[in-house]
Image (cartoon, rainbow, N blue to C red; front, side, top):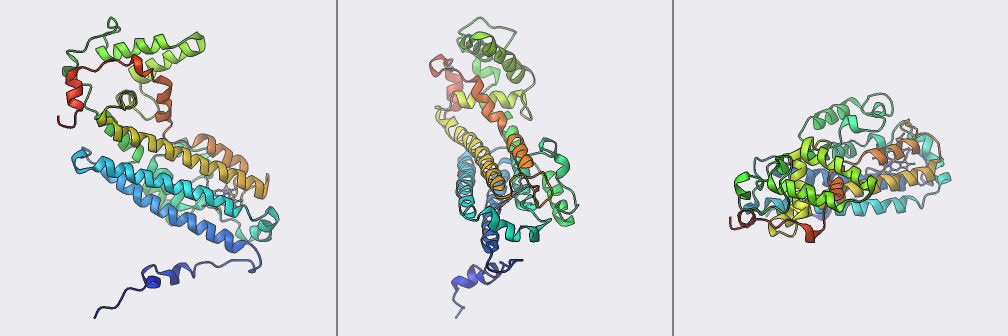
Length: 344
Ligand code: HEM
């Protein structure tokens, strides 16, 4: 008879529960400090697992909607968002430790720091945060004390060379198949065509312009030209930005509901990561004031800079600037609607 599976063995609790070894004596709060960090790292592991699955789906030449792949990707990302909602609450437990409780063991931790969390760096890199976008990138990725050990350094380099979820999403957006000229032949323009543009984009441009008022808002029009008619925005090409805008404008079309939910969830994840950074920064300020971090950065100053600068999907939120009222949306021609239909 095969041996029966036993809870403790299955979960390898002997290893996990034998992995808390405070450097100070047991009367300090260091046990709490260790367990909180370990709980974060376990959830980070789960996040990386899910992100890899989503990146696999988006690395294909076509996301196969018939196989439910878009739905799987969306649900995995939703799970990632839920995990961040939960881990962001854990800071509250750590804050039951007072700054003086922390001082009891803080010096014993130097030069280690959450800054060295390999998994946090992997999450950032897999989502799409690039080295050159980092606040004070000179703090980052070195093997000085407070930086990474050689092995982690190499792992981060290798992860940074892989396709990011952001770059895969851009390619997917660029493949959106609704802008082929042949689909728009019967489209009834609302306005005379300007600048030799395709009829829909000519109309959209004029509808947007008429929605602006005052010189400050009119400046948005130059931005519109740049983002949707010339260069694109950040890493998003013009084509990718157009696709995202189109999905957001016509999100009530059944075919766009999942893509819209997926884009919204990426924005949620960006917000939740920034909530993590914000809560963590407030907590660090409360614990150590203006002292430098154990990892050797300026401490709260560094964390505030990272909070401001490390948004990954800011191009997606930027699209909101360019939405128009639903009642002003151009009516789509039958051929485009047919192409959008699940039976097409
Ligand atoms: C007493 C509690 C904590 C304090 C005072 C604190 C302080 C700091 C400081 C000052 C830094 C900047 C790097 C440095 O110079 O050390 C940092 C970075 C970091 N810490 Fe904490 N931390 C605490 C708890 C945590 C916890 C529970 C986590 C959970 C994993 C965490 C994760 C991180 C991460 C991921 C970074 C890098 C942030 C980034 O580069 O955007 N920290 N921490």
